[in-house]
Image (cartoon, rainbow, N blue to C red; front, side, top):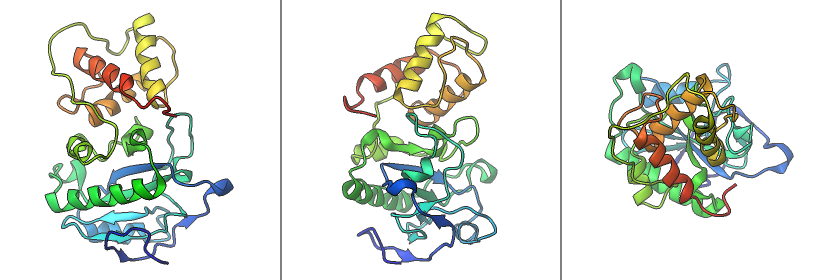
Length: 252
């Protein structure tokens, strides 16, 4: 195994990987948090054949970078999920696990050194694989209702300022009309159309059901993290509309 990134990395091969089906190549980056107490605990799990989980990279709290799986191989990090019609994200993505204990550990902040490494690594991957901004995603984006990482405390705005990801400044939270679970009708269908058109796995039913609520929650975690409640208030809808309107014209 040889390093793929020009950013210095320690090679610690995981046995948990396979071929990308049909000769597919990466077109996405998925960012995760490990949800474990330490980077060492995460490394043990990601390299344990009995766990059947892995990622291409692990970024430690102090900014150290480990590569576990070659980028050309299919790591096992995404699980069930969908984005823009793609139902097997492991086949088309590069997974980056970020050592952070998440809510079980009190949702600690991501240290500056760690985020600096994430930024440098993403910039390198994007340049080599020509990954589009709207394909730099949270695990929660592609697996809404099942996963919440890397969480609402992850600094997506900082990544955007470094040229990583598609992002707009969230609209301010204010009082006004809102859509919430149980609502139905054309407004709900239009909301679902925006979410699914951007990439979220969601059917246009016209009913604000559990799947719609989880998609809104995932959207808020990534793009409007000040309030994550699954309710499509004015701020959420405005932010979503601006995001969809500013998406690259040849987005998938």
